[in-house]
View 1 (cartoon, rainbow, N blue to C red):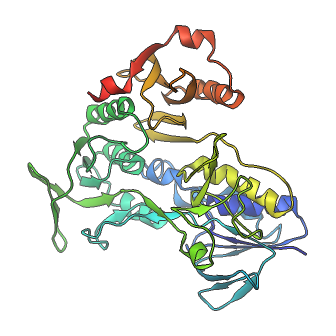
View 2 (cartoon, rainbow, N blue to C red):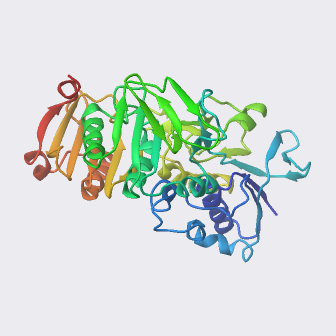
View 3 (cartoon, helix red, strand yellow):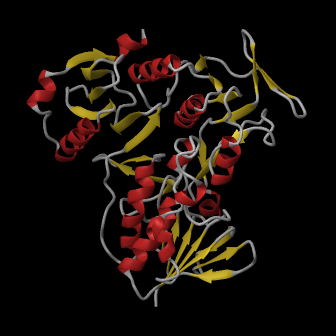
Length: 404
């Protein structure tokens, strides 16, 4: 009987457990999670959960209910403190030892902390408990200060504004969504938020934060003070690689894996946003923070753990929902300078197609145009040309012009 151990009970760990049971019905499966909850879906935490459209119980994955039926052992509120690769076992914070034939690390990431922020008062949104705490302060008229204008910060800003809060987003970079997206997109999303009454202050950091005992929080900016009832910090995440590093696995801003999601140890795999994995034909190692990675990689990892020869070759894809608008990013757009634009960037529907120096499509960003993303996925997957109706309805635009 094969013994499989999964460290991490988020989406990646959960999907791997279900896949392992399907691939190897007679095996023994243990999944460990540090949170005192059943595995649940995280994307709604910054969106529908904050808006009250879904409740805590609805976030739990529906097939978690099959764990007992199919003999998947879920260990809640349990931290893994060590991996012994020679003995092929892991040790828990309760000094329990579990042996494995194959081990999957799906340890995810944690919010990056700001040393000048009082953790007891600030809200870092990552877990259900964080979201419950945040939702409790999103009452009409409350003032919410958000540090960081990445996807988490902007999604929280949109939800807070829809709940009737006053919102100020503070970003140290010169624009919102500056990491990985061109100015064309940043400017369009910033206009969307400004039109909904969100104040965005870019190119600044909070010079100081005055925490009163129970009353308002004063955030000092260069030109004024924003008085908030709550402060949310969303300045990126740090991959949870400490366990892998201590075990001597290769770590470089993520757990390094090959296309089979295997680490340097043939018995240990990794999946989800903690992985640094090969992307594209060139095999560039990247760590991607997206739902799609946590959704798709566990199936490939589980296949490899059970002796199957599958590879992970998905095109990078992520999305964000803000003010009822759906933004999707596909492929490589970060350093692109030339695009084809379908629609108008000041409208509610548009698509930007990223081109390389040879004028070939390498990625796309679309607002409320899921069909264009599906079309671009087919083009990029097959290495083909853009359909004639797409090229005829598009016009060239330059990121350099947008940034000027």
